[in-house]
Length: 245
Ligand code: NDP
View 1 (cartoon, rainbow, N blue to C red):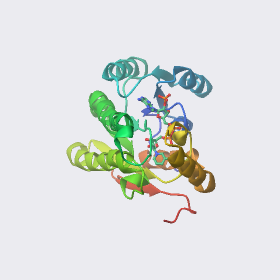
View 2 (tube, rainbow, N blue to C red):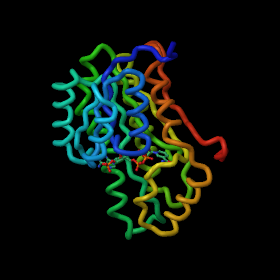
View 3 (cartoon, rainbow, N blue to C red):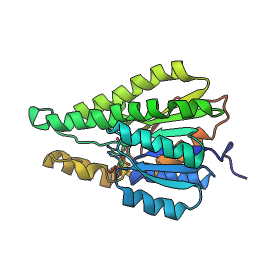
View 4 (cartoon, protein in one colour):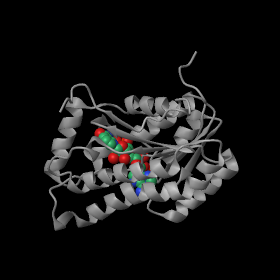
């Protein structure tokens, strides 16, 4: 018998086209949830939805474009009956020494990682409230707790996620549980987009040496949302065993 309870809900996952979002979609679908797979790369989420079969829908959506999130929410309502679980996972990590050269990247990270999560949440909030009980899972980072050089703007977005989630929990619980996930080094496409050569090299090397699969984070998210309603896992820091500090 599965240790997971309360399956069969509707989960919306932002950034489901790769990495942690894709793995989370697989894990939640395996637990019997319907899944709405949101990402900009429509082809990637369509292939995944086809693979997952009944109860999985692919939705082209950009978390920095509120209209696309509103349209996604309408489809989730119409095709799946509304969201019970929202996983705010979409994110970019454009690490570099803090300077004016990176100012567009700073803005892009804030708009995607922090404001994007806020937008998806305010748009889906009525659906989360309307269903019997809701789960909001915000993917933060170990960089929401500690931050080495090069991580200033990225860490600001993840610290922001943590602070926002703390206040949201007070406002939304007990109807909607708020869980923050803080992954350490995970082997995904995240470092592909770094433009600063030294930072890209350092992050790719660290991930190659220490990184664990996205599945390991997906399992934790699936576990958290499967707990009985009386329990909330507020904040979960998940790091590779080899990444002790
Ligand atoms: P990936 O690059 O593999 O995945 C990022 C996902 O975010 C993609 O599916 C991408 O889809 C999506 N995304 C990016 N921008 C947007 C946007 N504007 N609108 C919608 N979707 C968007 O990296 P990860 O899986 O590693 O990252 C997932 C989350 O995990 C991020 O929030 C990241 O900060 C966090 N994290 C990752 C760690 C790691 O070591 N990998 C460690 C700690 C936290 P598309 O391009 O198709 O839109």
